[in-house]
Amino acid sequence: MQYRTLGRTGYKVSQLGFGAMRLPMKGDKVDRDLAIPMIHKAFEAGLNYIDSAVGYLNGDSQVAVGEALKGWREKIVVSTKNHYYGEDEKAWRKNLDDSLSRLQVSYIDIYNTHGINWKTWEESIEPRVSKWLKKAKDEGLIRHICTSFHDNNDALRKLVDTGFYESVTLQYNMLDPQLEDAIAYAHEKGMGVTVMGPVGGGRLGASSQVLETLVPGIKRVPELALKFVLSNPNISIALSGMSTMQHVEENLKVASEPITFTTEDRKAVKEHLEKLWKMSDLYCSGCWYCMPCPSGVEIPTMFRIYNEARVYGMWDHAKGTYSWMKDQKKTPEACVECEKCMEKCPQKLEIPKRLKEVKEALAAK
Image 1: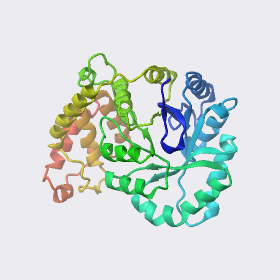
Image 2 (image 1 turned 90 degrees about the vertical axis):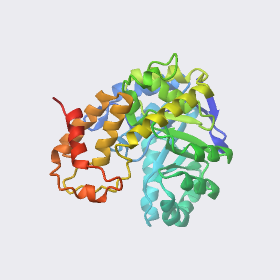
Image 3 (image 1 turned 30 degrees about the vertical axis):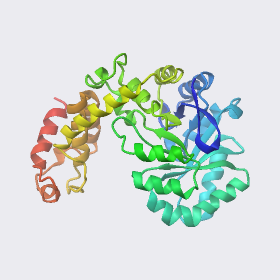
Image 4 (image 1 turned 135 degrees about the horizontal axis):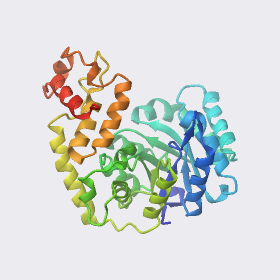
Protein backbone atom coordinates (compact mmCIF):
# COMPACT_ATOMS: atom_id res chain seq x y z
CA MET A 1 0.00 0.00 0.00
CA GLN A 2 1.15 3.52 -0.83
CA TYR A 3 0.73 6.30 1.74
CA ARG A 4 0.31 10.08 1.62
CA THR A 5 0.05 12.86 4.21
CA LEU A 6 -3.46 14.10 4.97
CA GLY A 7 -2.59 17.79 5.05
CA ARG A 8 -1.86 19.38 8.39
CA THR A 9 -3.56 16.56 10.31
CA GLY A 10 -0.17 14.91 9.89
CA TYR A 11 -1.73 11.46 9.41
CA LYS A 12 0.05 9.09 7.04
CA VAL A 13 -2.94 7.64 5.24
CA SER A 14 -3.32 4.94 2.62
CA GLN A 15 -4.01 6.50 -0.77
CA LEU A 16 -7.09 4.27 -0.95
CA GLY A 17 -9.78 4.83 1.66
CA PHE A 18 -12.80 2.64 2.42
CA GLY A 19 -16.11 4.44 1.96
CA ALA A 20 -18.70 2.64 4.08
CA MET A 21 -21.85 3.85 2.33
CA ARG A 22 -22.15 1.02 -0.21
CA LEU A 23 -21.59 -2.03 1.97
CA PRO A 24 -23.59 -5.14 1.01
CA MET A 25 -27.00 -5.29 2.61
CA LYS A 26 -29.31 -8.00 3.92
CA GLY A 27 -32.74 -6.43 4.09
CA ASP A 28 -32.38 -3.04 5.76
CA LYS A 29 -29.16 -3.96 7.62
CA VAL A 30 -25.54 -4.34 6.57
CA ASP A 31 -24.70 -7.97 5.77
CA ARG A 32 -21.97 -8.59 8.36
CA ASP A 33 -20.99 -11.94 6.85
CA LEU A 34 -19.96 -10.14 3.65
CA ALA A 35 -19.05 -6.63 4.81
CA ILE A 36 -16.72 -7.30 7.74
CA PRO A 37 -14.44 -9.72 5.81
CA MET A 38 -14.23 -7.06 3.06
CA ILE A 39 -13.17 -4.38 5.54
CA HIS A 40 -10.68 -6.71 7.22
CA LYS A 41 -9.24 -7.69 3.83
CA ALA A 42 -8.57 -3.99 3.19
CA PHE A 43 -7.07 -3.43 6.65
CA GLU A 44 -4.78 -6.46 6.25
CA ALA A 45 -3.52 -5.01 2.94
CA GLY A 46 -2.54 -1.75 4.67
CA LEU A 47 -5.63 0.42 4.06
CA ASN A 48 -5.88 2.58 7.17
CA TYR A 49 -8.70 5.08 6.49
CA ILE A 50 -12.42 4.34 6.72
CA ASP A 51 -15.30 6.79 6.39
CA SER A 52 -18.95 6.63 7.39
CA ALA A 53 -21.79 8.95 8.44
CA VAL A 54 -24.77 9.04 10.76
CA GLY A 55 -27.36 8.26 8.11
CA TYR A 56 -25.52 5.82 5.85
CA LEU A 57 -27.26 2.50 5.21
CA ASN A 58 -30.29 3.17 7.41
CA GLY A 59 -28.00 4.21 10.27
CA ASP A 60 -26.29 0.80 10.29
CA SER A 61 -23.05 1.74 8.52
CA GLN A 62 -21.38 3.14 11.63
CA VAL A 63 -22.44 0.11 13.68
CA ALA A 64 -20.94 -2.30 11.14
CA VAL A 65 -17.73 -0.25 10.94
CA GLY A 66 -17.51 -0.29 14.73
CA GLU A 67 -17.72 -4.07 14.73
CA ALA A 68 -15.04 -4.29 12.03
CA LEU A 69 -12.74 -1.97 14.01
CA LYS A 70 -12.41 -4.40 16.92
CA GLY A 71 -8.71 -5.26 17.20
CA TRP A 72 -7.81 -2.61 14.61
CA ARG A 73 -8.76 0.72 16.20
CA GLU A 74 -5.28 2.07 16.92
CA LYS A 75 -4.12 1.37 13.37
CA ILE A 76 -7.05 2.99 11.57
CA VAL A 77 -7.96 6.62 10.92
CA VAL A 78 -11.71 6.80 11.51
CA SER A 79 -13.74 9.44 9.68
CA THR A 80 -17.42 10.22 10.10
CA LYS A 81 -19.82 13.11 9.62
CA ASN A 82 -22.49 15.17 11.37
CA HIS A 83 -25.25 16.56 9.16
CA TYR A 84 -27.03 18.72 11.76
CA TYR A 85 -26.82 22.50 11.19
CA GLY A 86 -29.79 23.70 13.19
CA GLU A 87 -29.79 25.81 16.34
CA ASP A 88 -30.09 23.06 18.96
CA GLU A 89 -26.65 22.12 20.28
CA LYS A 90 -28.13 19.08 22.02
CA ALA A 91 -29.35 17.68 18.70
CA TRP A 92 -25.88 18.17 17.18
CA ARG A 93 -24.23 16.60 20.22
CA LYS A 94 -26.59 13.60 20.08
CA ASN A 95 -25.29 12.81 16.58
CA LEU A 96 -21.73 12.92 17.90
CA ASP A 97 -22.56 10.77 20.93
CA ASP A 98 -24.43 8.28 18.75
CA SER A 99 -21.44 8.05 16.41
CA LEU A 100 -19.03 7.38 19.27
CA SER A 101 -21.35 4.67 20.59
CA ARG A 102 -22.03 3.02 17.24
CA LEU A 103 -18.37 3.06 16.21
CA GLN A 104 -17.39 1.83 19.70
CA VAL A 105 -14.61 4.40 19.97
CA SER A 106 -13.65 6.97 22.60
CA TYR A 107 -12.71 9.57 19.98
CA ILE A 108 -13.09 10.19 16.24
CA ASP A 109 -10.01 11.06 14.21
CA ILE A 110 -11.63 12.98 11.33
CA TYR A 111 -14.94 14.64 12.22
CA ASN A 112 -16.70 16.27 9.27
CA THR A 113 -19.49 18.76 8.88
CA HIS A 114 -21.51 16.90 6.28
CA GLY A 115 -21.97 18.11 2.69
CA ILE A 116 -21.68 21.85 3.21
CA ASN A 117 -21.54 24.73 0.75
CA TRP A 118 -20.51 28.34 1.31
CA LYS A 119 -24.03 29.34 2.35
CA THR A 120 -24.04 26.61 5.02
CA TRP A 121 -20.71 27.89 6.32
CA GLU A 122 -21.87 31.50 6.55
CA GLU A 123 -25.33 30.84 7.99
CA SER A 124 -24.76 27.81 10.23
CA ILE A 125 -21.20 26.58 10.68
CA GLU A 126 -19.33 29.80 11.40
CA PRO A 127 -21.86 31.33 13.84
CA ARG A 128 -22.83 28.16 15.76
CA VAL A 129 -21.55 24.73 14.78
CA SER A 130 -17.90 25.81 14.76
CA LYS A 131 -18.14 26.54 18.48
CA TRP A 132 -19.64 23.10 19.19
CA LEU A 133 -16.87 21.46 17.16
CA LYS A 134 -14.16 23.30 19.10
CA LYS A 135 -15.76 22.30 22.39
CA ALA A 136 -15.87 18.62 21.35
CA LYS A 137 -12.24 18.82 20.29
CA ASP A 138 -11.25 20.37 23.61
CA GLU A 139 -13.01 17.47 25.33
CA GLY A 140 -10.92 15.00 23.32
CA LEU A 141 -13.92 13.49 21.54
CA ILE A 142 -12.67 14.49 18.08
CA ARG A 143 -9.09 14.94 16.92
CA HIS A 144 -9.43 16.98 13.71
CA ILE A 145 -12.20 19.27 12.44
CA CYS A 146 -12.88 18.59 8.78
CA THR A 147 -15.72 18.75 6.25
CA SER A 148 -17.31 17.20 3.23
CA PHE A 149 -18.16 19.73 0.57
CA HIS A 150 -20.51 20.30 -2.38
CA ASP A 151 -20.00 23.64 -4.11
CA ASN A 152 -17.81 25.37 -6.71
CA ASN A 153 -14.16 26.46 -6.96
CA ASP A 154 -14.76 29.94 -5.57
CA ALA A 155 -16.59 28.56 -2.55
CA LEU A 156 -13.84 26.04 -1.85
CA ARG A 157 -11.15 28.70 -2.03
CA LYS A 158 -13.06 30.87 0.44
CA LEU A 159 -13.56 27.89 2.74
CA VAL A 160 -9.83 27.13 2.62
CA ASP A 161 -9.05 30.74 3.49
CA THR A 162 -11.10 30.55 6.70
CA GLY A 163 -8.37 28.26 8.05
CA PHE A 164 -11.00 26.37 10.05
CA TYR A 165 -10.85 22.94 8.45
CA GLU A 166 -7.85 20.62 8.28
CA SER A 167 -9.11 18.45 5.44
CA VAL A 168 -11.94 18.37 2.93
CA THR A 169 -13.80 15.52 1.27
CA LEU A 170 -15.18 16.39 -2.16
CA GLN A 171 -16.32 15.12 -5.54
CA TYR A 172 -13.67 14.74 -8.25
CA ASN A 173 -13.31 12.25 -11.09
CA MET A 174 -12.76 11.97 -14.83
CA LEU A 175 -16.36 12.93 -15.56
CA ASP A 176 -16.38 15.77 -13.04
CA PRO A 177 -12.93 17.40 -12.66
CA GLN A 178 -14.30 20.93 -12.16
CA LEU A 179 -12.77 21.43 -8.69
CA GLU A 180 -9.22 20.73 -9.84
CA ASP A 181 -8.02 24.33 -9.47
CA ALA A 182 -9.36 24.77 -5.93
CA ILE A 183 -8.07 21.32 -4.95
CA ALA A 184 -4.57 22.51 -5.84
CA TYR A 185 -5.16 25.65 -3.77
CA ALA A 186 -6.36 23.62 -0.77
CA HIS A 187 -3.28 21.39 -0.95
CA GLU A 188 -0.99 24.41 -1.24
CA LYS A 189 -2.55 25.84 1.94
CA GLY A 190 -1.96 22.63 3.87
CA MET A 191 -5.39 21.02 3.74
CA GLY A 192 -5.80 17.33 3.20
CA VAL A 193 -7.97 16.45 0.19
CA THR A 194 -10.05 13.29 0.14
CA VAL A 195 -11.92 12.44 -3.03
CA MET A 196 -15.32 10.78 -2.88
CA GLY A 197 -16.74 9.22 -6.01
CA PRO A 198 -13.48 8.48 -7.84
CA VAL A 199 -15.47 6.18 -10.11
CA GLY A 200 -18.30 8.67 -10.57
CA GLY A 201 -20.78 7.10 -8.18
CA GLY A 202 -20.53 3.82 -10.06
CA ARG A 203 -20.83 5.31 -13.56
CA LEU A 204 -17.14 4.63 -14.22
CA GLY A 205 -17.57 1.08 -13.02
CA ALA A 206 -19.32 0.25 -16.27
CA SER A 207 -17.63 -0.93 -19.43
CA SER A 208 -16.88 1.66 -22.11
CA GLN A 209 -15.28 1.01 -25.48
CA VAL A 210 -14.14 4.63 -25.58
CA LEU A 211 -12.54 4.85 -22.13
CA GLU A 212 -10.98 1.40 -22.30
CA THR A 213 -8.70 2.54 -25.13
CA LEU A 214 -7.60 5.95 -23.78
CA VAL A 215 -4.40 4.90 -21.98
CA PRO A 216 -2.18 2.04 -23.20
CA GLY A 217 -2.04 -0.84 -20.76
CA ILE A 218 -5.23 0.13 -18.89
CA LYS A 219 -8.20 -1.84 -20.15
CA ARG A 220 -10.61 -1.55 -17.21
CA VAL A 221 -12.52 1.69 -16.69
CA PRO A 222 -12.51 1.56 -12.85
CA GLU A 223 -8.71 1.20 -12.87
CA LEU A 224 -8.43 4.15 -15.26
CA ALA A 225 -10.73 6.24 -13.08
CA LEU A 226 -8.87 5.44 -9.85
CA LYS A 227 -5.47 6.09 -11.40
CA PHE A 228 -6.70 9.38 -12.86
CA VAL A 229 -7.63 10.59 -9.36
CA LEU A 230 -4.53 9.25 -7.62
CA SER A 231 -2.20 10.66 -10.27
CA ASN A 232 -3.17 14.13 -9.06
CA PRO A 233 -0.42 15.01 -6.53
CA ASN A 234 -2.80 17.32 -4.66
CA ILE A 235 -5.06 14.42 -3.65
CA SER A 236 -4.46 12.65 -0.33
CA ILE A 237 -7.02 9.83 -0.52
CA ALA A 238 -9.33 8.28 -3.08
CA LEU A 239 -12.34 7.15 -1.06
CA SER A 240 -14.01 4.18 -2.73
CA GLY A 241 -17.44 2.90 -1.76
CA MET A 242 -16.76 -0.81 -2.18
CA SER A 243 -19.67 -3.24 -2.13
CA THR A 244 -18.10 -6.58 -3.07
CA MET A 245 -14.89 -8.44 -2.26
CA GLN A 246 -13.97 -8.16 -5.94
CA HIS A 247 -14.12 -4.35 -5.69
CA VAL A 248 -11.86 -4.49 -2.65
CA GLU A 249 -9.30 -6.75 -4.30
CA GLU A 250 -9.20 -4.79 -7.55
CA ASN A 251 -8.84 -1.42 -5.83
CA LEU A 252 -6.18 -2.73 -3.45
CA LYS A 253 -4.17 -3.94 -6.42
CA VAL A 254 -4.19 -0.47 -7.98
CA ALA A 255 -3.44 1.34 -4.69
CA SER A 256 -0.67 -1.01 -3.59
CA GLU A 257 1.71 0.23 -6.28
CA PRO A 258 3.05 3.67 -7.20
CA ILE A 259 0.75 5.32 -9.72
CA THR A 260 2.40 5.14 -13.14
CA PHE A 261 -0.21 7.36 -14.75
CA THR A 262 2.00 10.02 -16.35
CA THR A 263 1.45 13.72 -16.88
CA GLU A 264 1.06 12.93 -20.56
CA ASP A 265 -1.56 10.30 -19.77
CA ARG A 266 -3.56 12.80 -17.70
CA LYS A 267 -3.31 15.41 -20.42
CA ALA A 268 -4.43 12.97 -23.09
CA VAL A 269 -7.41 11.83 -21.00
CA LYS A 270 -8.51 15.36 -20.15
CA GLU A 271 -8.17 16.63 -23.72
CA HIS A 272 -10.12 13.68 -25.05
CA LEU A 273 -12.87 14.06 -22.45
CA GLU A 274 -13.14 17.79 -23.10
CA LYS A 275 -13.69 17.13 -26.80
CA LEU A 276 -16.31 14.53 -26.03
CA TRP A 277 -18.14 16.76 -23.56
CA LYS A 278 -18.22 19.63 -26.04
CA MET A 279 -20.01 17.23 -28.33
CA SER A 280 -22.49 16.28 -25.60
CA ASP A 281 -23.10 19.92 -24.63
CA LEU A 282 -24.66 20.44 -28.04
CA TYR A 283 -27.44 18.22 -26.75
CA CYS A 284 -27.93 19.70 -23.26
CA SER A 285 -25.66 21.87 -21.11
CA GLY A 286 -27.18 20.65 -17.85
CA CYS A 287 -28.21 24.11 -16.61
CA TRP A 288 -31.47 22.75 -15.07
CA TYR A 289 -33.45 25.85 -16.12
CA CYS A 290 -36.06 23.53 -17.63
CA MET A 291 -36.95 22.15 -14.21
CA PRO A 292 -39.19 21.40 -12.48
CA CYS A 293 -41.17 19.42 -15.02
CA PRO A 294 -44.93 19.44 -14.26
CA SER A 295 -45.04 15.72 -15.09
CA GLY A 296 -42.03 14.81 -12.95
CA VAL A 297 -39.59 13.97 -15.75
CA GLU A 298 -35.97 14.55 -14.66
CA ILE A 299 -35.06 16.12 -17.97
CA PRO A 300 -31.36 17.00 -17.36
CA THR A 301 -30.69 13.57 -15.83
CA MET A 302 -32.24 11.87 -18.85
CA PHE A 303 -30.02 13.85 -21.18
CA ARG A 304 -26.93 13.27 -18.99
CA ILE A 305 -27.19 9.49 -18.97
CA TYR A 306 -27.95 9.50 -22.69
CA ASN A 307 -24.91 11.72 -23.32
CA GLU A 308 -22.69 9.40 -21.28
CA ALA A 309 -23.92 6.45 -23.31
CA ARG A 310 -23.39 8.25 -26.63
CA VAL A 311 -20.05 9.78 -25.69
CA TYR A 312 -18.45 6.99 -23.66
CA GLY A 313 -20.30 3.94 -24.89
CA MET A 314 -21.67 3.20 -21.39
CA TRP A 315 -24.98 1.88 -22.70
CA ASP A 316 -25.53 -0.85 -20.10
CA HIS A 317 -25.19 1.60 -17.22
CA ALA A 318 -27.43 4.15 -18.92
CA LYS A 319 -30.15 1.57 -19.61
CA GLY A 320 -29.98 0.31 -16.03
CA THR A 321 -30.35 3.84 -14.64
CA TYR A 322 -33.20 4.54 -17.06
CA SER A 323 -35.03 1.40 -15.96
CA TRP A 324 -34.72 2.36 -12.29
CA MET A 325 -35.92 5.91 -12.96
CA LYS A 326 -38.80 4.60 -15.06
CA ASP A 327 -40.07 2.81 -11.97
CA GLN A 328 -39.95 6.20 -10.22
CA LYS A 329 -42.00 7.75 -13.09
CA LYS A 330 -39.21 10.19 -13.93
CA THR A 331 -38.51 9.15 -17.55
CA PRO A 332 -39.94 10.40 -20.89
CA GLU A 333 -42.88 8.00 -20.58
CA ALA A 334 -44.38 10.60 -18.22
CA CYS A 335 -43.95 13.48 -20.69
CA VAL A 336 -47.24 15.01 -21.91
CA GLU A 337 -45.50 17.42 -24.33
CA CYS A 338 -46.77 20.53 -22.56
CA GLU A 339 -43.62 22.32 -23.84
CA LYS A 340 -43.23 24.38 -20.65
CA CYS A 341 -39.62 23.15 -20.53
CA MET A 342 -38.96 24.60 -23.98
CA GLU A 343 -40.11 28.03 -22.79
CA LYS A 344 -37.40 27.98 -20.10
CA CYS A 345 -34.55 26.37 -22.08
CA PRO A 346 -31.82 28.96 -22.90
CA GLN A 347 -30.68 26.79 -25.81
CA LYS A 348 -34.21 26.59 -27.18
CA LEU A 349 -33.93 22.83 -27.52
CA GLU A 350 -36.91 20.84 -28.74
CA ILE A 351 -36.99 18.97 -25.45
CA PRO A 352 -40.05 16.74 -25.97
CA LYS A 353 -38.66 15.60 -29.30
CA ARG A 354 -35.27 14.84 -27.79
CA LEU A 355 -36.83 13.03 -24.85
CA LYS A 356 -38.42 10.71 -27.38
CA GLU A 357 -34.93 10.01 -28.75
CA VAL A 358 -33.74 9.18 -25.22
CA LYS A 359 -36.71 6.84 -24.72
CA GLU A 360 -36.07 5.12 -28.04
CA ALA A 361 -32.39 4.58 -27.19
CA LEU A 362 -32.62 3.58 -23.54
CA ALA A 363 -36.05 2.05 -22.87
CA ALA A 364 -36.03 -1.73 -22.71
CA LYS A 365 -37.10 -3.28 -25.95
